[in-house]
Length: 555
Image 1 (cartoon, rainbow, N blue to C red):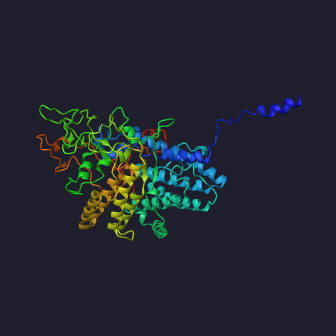
Image 2 (image 1 turned 60 degrees about the horizontal axis):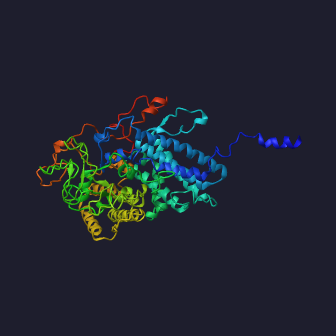
Image 3 (image 1 turned 90 degrees about the horizontal axis):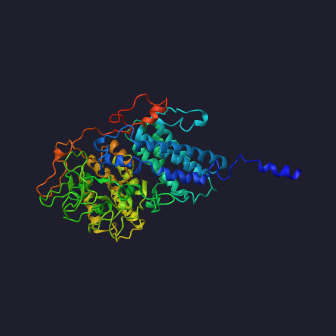
């Protein structure tokens, strides 16, 4: 009996299921945070498709055309839901790290909190922060904090994170860290570089001129521990794996792997890249074009899907006979706007999504000897070359010591190197030429610098911001931020009193500006998710007017 009694003590203790732990290890929490954070502003199920149209690098036939995204749109709501789910995981990682004395994990958790909350403010403005993730304390309807207050806290959180990381001499997180492989120096450089980006973002706001922010800004510049090369890029590396989890680039999945093609290349962006825009980079074709987009039509090839060979009417909303580029225009109401052009349409290329490099052989995006790309391209969130453009802007406006022209040139060269790096890591079977150091790149940069040096201060800022916009293709959140706070790059305007597009194929079927129109106004922020307003009694009582509601740094 005594043997049976002793044995039953452990046997009857069945309240803990060791196969389903209630507490996730720090390493697994961190990996999940990093994977999910990469979806914020991404394509497919998230808001990247919207933002890439608003910043005029892609076009679409959906609500984002005409700036008509609605409050109940699923994609911004997915971003919102992911941000607040992530904050819960971040709080768990932080509390567990404090309990275990692992300052490295704690510091990284704070950096992700800073990244997510600054992004939330950038997209929505006032959002829950101080009372968010406090369900255990009984708060089920968190109040919305003021934008400026959140940004102020974010800047402080980054400082705390740096202290936590440097104070931990023991924790090793190599395998758990999918971004920097546990390299503390890279995390510190990211923290400083990202913080400088935020200071630059608020430079035109009243907050920037407060003594506390000014002191922090000067201290950060004095510390001078920023990104050093593209090995410091804050990005999530996609793979070609499909199972057990699909790890392919989401823009690739939206384009090459979708039942219905929706990621149309922007003709406005295209004309800037080929050098026909009359006000910026005129007669200076960008050598990155075949890395950015795949033309399925060869030079001079007539559209196959919808072209009428009897009348030689291409029936295309936008088609460049010289290069085979074919797409639809923003705000189009033309007769060919809704034509089925999947087999001819220009696709995103190898750099933005791991698709195909345009070798001018008329490769099909779906069926060809090269396959349809590898889908291996990183989700770029804040890279070294983007950081150099931030510094160039700060120098141009007199907030940082240095020559803005020299920094701009350095940034463009780094952008070319970034293209080469993405291509080299894509595992492509194509023979893709190296950009950096090529004659095309040298000539392009020479002309950019001539344009920059000959311009007044406003033109110089436009050149910096336009090149940053070109370099960060497929990273649309920062592009959306830059456009709102600086007014650059100049974007397509269907209501322009001047000729919007410059293309003339000389084929008797010219583009007509009357075939584009604009029925909506540019949205200065995202609508708050309608589901949040319906369920949170402490949310704003009235939905915002997204065409009037500005983020505090928007000038």
